[in-house]
Structure formats: structure tokens, C-alpha cells
Image 1 (spheres, rainbow, N blue to C red):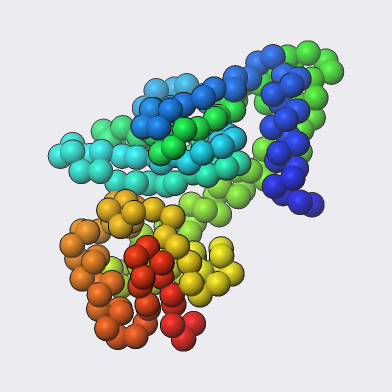
Image 2: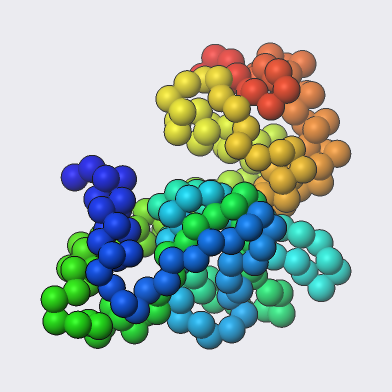
Length: 210
């Protein structure tokens, strides 16, 4: 099965045939959804990029996850057990498909094509999302900044099937994503260069001997 093709067909079918979904546009920096309320929403990113962001009580920002085309998100994936609000913020202009958990159980009309595609695709979307979350957990459980960086670089290398790749986020956002101090991170990157483990040219990284 071509996963990306099937998801694109699913989105097209949903948009044309189901009366209980919404297709919304969000401008850069606009809040798409929050996880603090019981909205019972499932969101699929049709275009653009967005971040799942947390600010703690001291105002410190963490990028919990980044979403790109065909990614699925919603409070279903995170239980907010502490007093820190999670919200999804558009990094670029975004188009999002939004629907309620309830329509997974109840058809809006007997011949709704969306529900046929929903059964076929939504679970694979969710499994794909949990795979991404597992990668993030692996990164955050690394004990050193060096190990976190090399773990992240390895993931990008595999995704691009190349030892050389461009960072998809700024270094400031990378520090937030890995929950590390930016200055300490940049010192570690310099050390990795000096040791011949990586090469850096602007936002391009090359993994050496990997």
C-alpha cells in the first residue's frame, strides 16, 4: 500500500463527501488547537508545518513535536497531567482537516464515503504518529547533549537517505525540541566538528563515518 497516496485520497474523500468535518486555514503563528480542553478533536495537517508547544509555569518553551503534511494530532495523543498547556501553533500557513471522535462511530449519512476511508486509514495514521513519538522519547532519554544531537542527526540522515541533510528547524528551535540549553548545544556542535564526527555548513550537517 502506498501510504501517502492513500492518505491523500482519504483527505479528498473526506473533504468532498462528509458534512461533519471542517477544512480550515490558519495563518503563520496562529493557534490551531489546544490540548487543555476536552475538544475531542482529531486534526490532519493537509499542508504547511506546525509545532506542538508547551510553556511551563516559568515561561520556558519546549517544542514537543513538529507536524508536517499528513500528520495527525489532537489531545488523544497526550494526556495533560500537569498544569502546562499544550497547543499546536502554525509555523507556516496551514490547511487542516478537523473532525470529532464521534463521527468515527456514527455516520453522518448512510453512503458517506469518508467513513469508508476513515476505517481504512485512520488507524495507520495513528500508528505512524506513535512511531514518531517513540523516536522523540528515544531522543529525550539520551543522557548527554552529544547523544541527543547525534540521535536527531541520525534520524534526519535516515529520512533523507543521505549523510548530508539540511536541518528542518532553526538551532534555537532545535534546542527547544531537544530540551537543552542553546549555548551548550552550540558548544557541543563545535566539539563534534573538531572531533571530525560531523561537518557543518550553515544549516547543513554531514555525518562522517556513518
